[in-house]
Length: 92
Image (cartoon, rainbow, N blue to C red):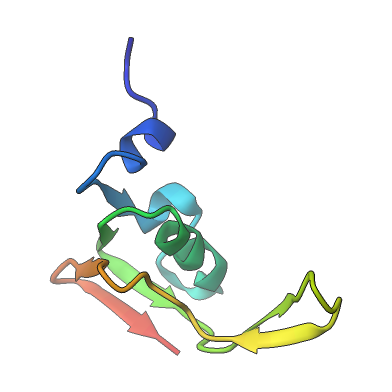
């Protein structure tokens, strides 16, 4: 039985590639949601391959408790490490 991406991400010390979550790294597409999904995966290391990742530092989401719109920043877990390749940049 082969490991799937989801079971691999759940393993302690695993890494998550932002492109596996839909980031394009093309410098024009907003990759904020894909990067947050990678952060939310719980992987210990978040990997950014070569590319320019457009990130909106404040994103809107609906708060399920109040049904109101909340503005939030990208939120890594406290023990996560972000690893950018030599040719990867984050752009606002």
